[in-house]
Structure formats: C-alpha cells, structure tokens
Length: 358
Image (tube, rainbow, N blue to C red; front, side):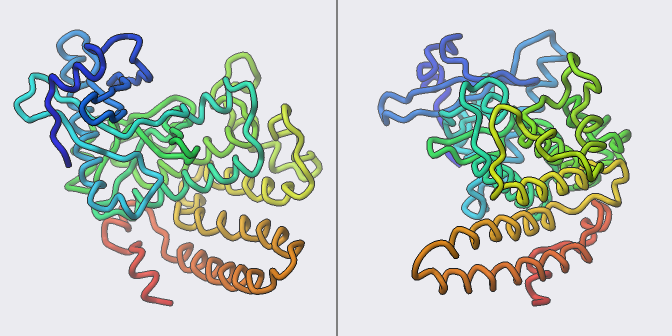
C-alpha cells in the first residue's frame, strides 16, 4: 500500500474542484485526480463534511473502507473484479484520503438506466458473472468480508469495460463478533435483504439477496425501486412473473432490445438464479460460490454452441465439456457445504477444503 502526499492529492484534484467530482455516495465523494509528475490518473475519495456527528460517522466509514481494501490488497491478484486499491494519504494528514484506480466508463446503474445504447445480452451475462466472482472472492477471503451494499451504482467499469465491485464503506469483516461491530443493519433500500433486521441476522446470504436484485436489474433494466410502477419493487414484480410458466421471458427482459433465440436459455437460467437469490427464506438461497459455478456452466453451454459451428473446433468442444462437468461437480459440493455465516465462521466453507475433496 502506497502513501501519497496530501497536498499532491489536493493539487491533483484542483483543490477538490466540483469539475473533478465523478461520484458521490452516502459517506464520501470521489474525484478524478491527475498526478502531473507521474502523469497518472487516479480516483481520490474523501469523507463528506456535515454536522459533527455526521462527519465523524463518514470518517469512520472511510477508515473502514481503507481497512477492508487494504486487507484485500494482499490477495488482489486473485480477483480482477475488485476495484484496485492504490493507497492513502500520509498518516499525519489532517484528513484521510483513499486512492483507487480510476474507472473511466461509469457504473452499471448508468449503463442500464442512462446510456443511449443498452448493453447487449452477452455483455449482460458477462457482467453478471464478473460481479458474482467479485462477491465470491469477498466471501471466500480470509478473513471473510460481507459487502452489505451490493447495487448497480457500486459496480464500475474499467477502460476495458470489465465490471469491478466498489464502495466498501459499509463492508464487514469476519474479525471478532459482527453483532458488536454493527449497531444496526445498513444498505440501500430496494437491495437490502428483508431478513437482515438485526445485527445478528447478518450473513453472506445478505449479499446474495442484493446480488439477486442486481441480476433482475441486469435482465429487465428496471430500477430496484421505481415508484412510478406497480409494484414499485423489482423483486415483487419480477419473481411472480418468473414463476408463471406460461409468461414469455420477453415480458421480463429489457424491452429496448430483442432477445435472440440463442440467448433465451441462458437468460432464463439467469432469471432462475436471480429468483433463488432473492428468496424470502434465507436458507433457500444459494451461496455465491454455487451461483458463480452454475453461471459459468450455462455460459459454457453457449460457448459450446458457438464452438460447434466453427471448423477444427472439436478439441475446444471436448475441453469445454470436461470443464463443464467439473464445474457441475464442484457446484454440487458447494451446495452441500454451503452454510450461513455462523457455519462459515467455523471454517466449513473454505475453497481449499472443497478442492481437496476432488
């Protein structure tokens, strides 16, 4: 983790000029910074100033985000789908600043709800899988991390349009007792798990619910909460429709772009995964590792269809089928081993343990 000179970061943002503001959250503002000496573009986050108790709370959230990201930093090479943490301002700085990689292509929320050209179906599936892998990395990290604020606005795109999960101000680590760390449930309305009513109810399945809402958003391009529609909740609208076998999948999909026949199976599978993730019964939700493996499997099916149509592709086809079978076996193992947070804390869901069983 690098330490940056506070004044250099101030100059890089032109004194935190409004023209450099690129994002604003519940506890901090993010600015585009250009370090002239290195000719390097950065994203610089500082806590939002308010009345005393609000400022203190925002500073604590920024400190928490720094703590979480620094704990992930040692393992960052294992997950390209977590935003890259670069460092902080010097310890003696009057106010702490968080320095991250600059994400030039905005958020998933903007892509789905504001962009002139909606994303293609293959791109949506790719984004869904990348987010799943990011959450899987958090849940299988040591110590385990629960994000608590997974939403489309916190999924950002790098220069290559790869999705990365950002904003760890509300994240919780499995260090000590979670019930003592969190005084009350936190998150964003529309994405929050209805089962998460007290600190003791926090588990990895809290993130799984939020991820399921994002999946529904990716499929439908409808906002998590839209008061102009009835029902206003995307979960209350989409899940009953998905459970009606006679309802065409097109009624749930983004109406702005047609769903090609070759993608129907994949999107229906994606919808089924989303419905399981947002189940009102926490025990019926899959763990994120199972979700990632299952999604990877049905994505491979689509790849195989393309491979079959290509000449001299049988070697690739065989390899794809072998990999698919392995993914399914691992998904079954994950389903058997997947427990809630209290079981995870006992060490029952470790990736290396699953792999050792192979």
